[in-house]
Image (cartoon, rainbow, N blue to C red; front, side, top):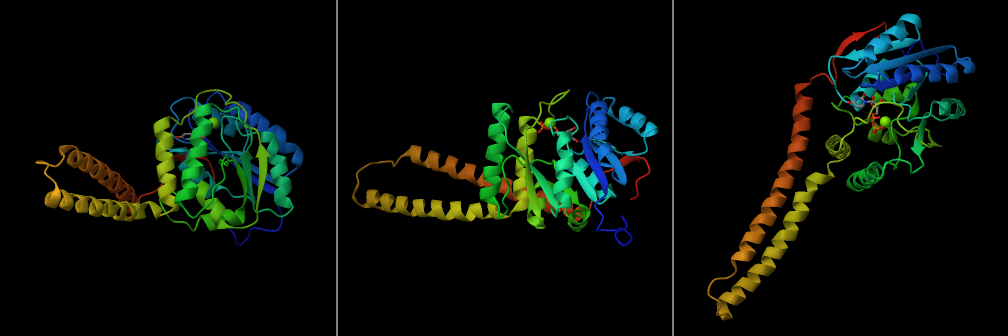
Length: 320
Ligand code: UDP
Ligand code: MG
């Protein structure tokens, strides 16, 4: 990226970043729709960056075919699957133009909104994020995403809005700021909001996934949620103190009772049940806390190793 020579005042060039994992049934349709929608805008330059996240279907082949016939099509191909957030990150890292739109490959994010996003961007917004409004998603997905945002918000200082996914337009200067975050496994969704800048929302109704299946199983979503929460805040680390104080207080009350029984009671053996119950309870809490500390420790470990976030196996001419 050459920020020195780039004219930052002209909002007339656009990069589109598309994380792609096993989307062979969607790529061509998405490509056609993008072209149809963006070509009439008469932009000075356009690039469509497909980030192939280690697909094992024909996705990469299809993308390469498109690239062979259209030099606006760029691709980055990962050496294996690294996950949606890192595919997105790679795309943003390589995007060269003034405005950068990111969207999913499965056509759930309506391409028709891109002109509106550009409109808002041109009238001053640096971040145009999208907000899902409808309820046609499966119950489980809706509920779990609502829960996710509620938990993230209560556990971190950052406020994420429900229904905000990775369908947005960013000005290059926002990307520039984002590049300064050197943390591994950057949680883009949470960071963008906290970057500041002029942010505006656009509402949309998601379409049904065109072809293929969702890549987010319950366990992946849970992992995503945990990564998100622990990326955005260190609050969970304080839990052990709160729990500790709370249970120490309970133990104090209980020991008063035990002394009372010892002094005035005539029961022979005080309850086995209460001992077992407290061991299980406290043991459980300790395991949770160790787990939480473990997640953070894992992050420190990953960061200290300084490993790359993603590995590119192949790409066509994109500058670094
Ligand atoms: N994706 C990816 N890597 C993954 C999983 C998903 O690049 O490991 C891409 C996928 O191809 C799609 C987007 O991320 O373009 C969103 O994935 P999906 O539609 O499966 O998620 P959902 O919409 O169900 O939340
Ligand atoms: Mg989807």
